Image (cartoon, rainbow, N blue to C red; front, side):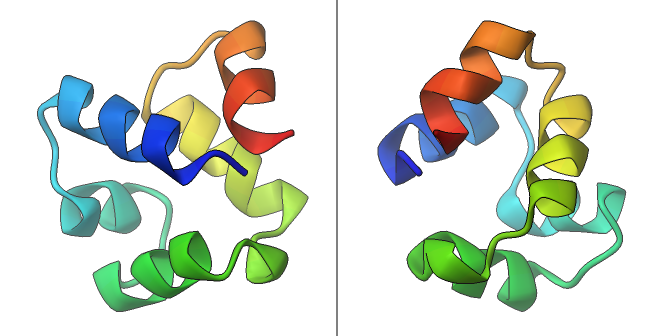
Length: 65
């Protein structure tokens, strides 16, 4: 996972990590921890983030794979 690209995408969205986390049904702390330790990020989490941040498929692939 490219954390720099994910952080940039969150900033571009105009939302905070807490706001994005709320959209995907987790706390800001949980999302932050998953971003710091990508092994804990599930495919489901990635799909929820893709949708919450309005990413296209290529953007999601660039960030999560």
